[in-house]
Length: 386
Ligand code: KIV
Ligand code: ZN
Image 1 (tube, rainbow, N blue to C red):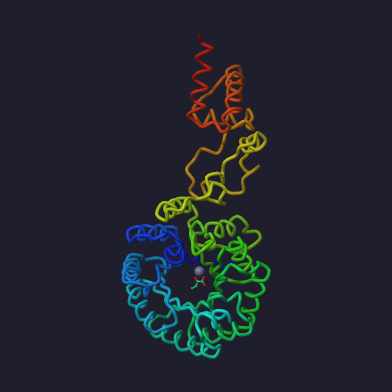
Image 2 (tube, rainbow, N blue to C red):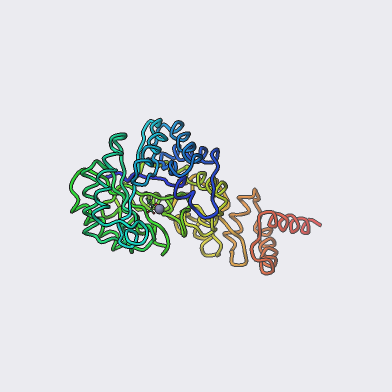
């Protein structure tokens, strides 16, 4: 089985989320958690973007020992000099350089010709390589670029020393089948020894699907952020990719080195520090991801969780309990399981009384919280005694 490397950019692309501004101590805590989760590469920031950013990249680089620490740099000497100064203290440093390859970026933003992009790629990858053996090259807006030109640029990057070539879907534009074909074409046409990486944005809600399609087509590094935060609609949600590769091992025949039992904790941490709540129906880490409300489903999971779950919640480090959500749709099996969870062991007759009281209240209130259920039980048992 082949390994897929996980590249986390929560501290860089994630920190570019509108409204998010992670502080140094928060970044350090997240970086340590990512290392504990065994993320392969942590992109600690964009060192040349400000003095504060430089210091935080450098601090993280000096603390993290097991993961590779990367910093993003434009393909300009000054960025690469500053970036290297920031990550050189790392046990395993990486310089990550990028340049745009789409015509729209070249003509309206960068004012560069295609030939100039090729020249800059060659000279700046070589420049970064003088400092660091581990150089990643990203072709910004790759998915809206002319494929022949993109392949030329990537070939130059590899020949100049890039060991990872990243194919960003910068504006979240591509469709899974198309992305898979692009990755396959790159692997066929670009000679040399390199890893192909994916970096997807979620503008069409396809970032995870695109990343997985790319992996199936041969990409062996996935970039993304915890909880899918990032510019605009966000990046690939790493926890979703990691769990898809694990749960569907039969399909992918691949693995990651991630300790998935750290996922829940790191997700909570990123939500707390980014100030971005996790939507309840979010895959893997949402509040409802392992909760069941309808009577039929509750009956199913009480008999065997796999009737309606494909992931063992302990696999993502979810604290035990809380799988049953009681409301008017719930049946006896769900109610009984919840009562056992709360420490009650009722007789058949008591159960009938409680069930009927619970249904009356649920019809009015909707969801019945644990503390409300306890009150129903106590009240019912009390009435029976008197
Ligand atoms: O989305 C993007 O293109 C990026 C690159 C700079 C890697 O974040
Ligand atoms: Zn990005």
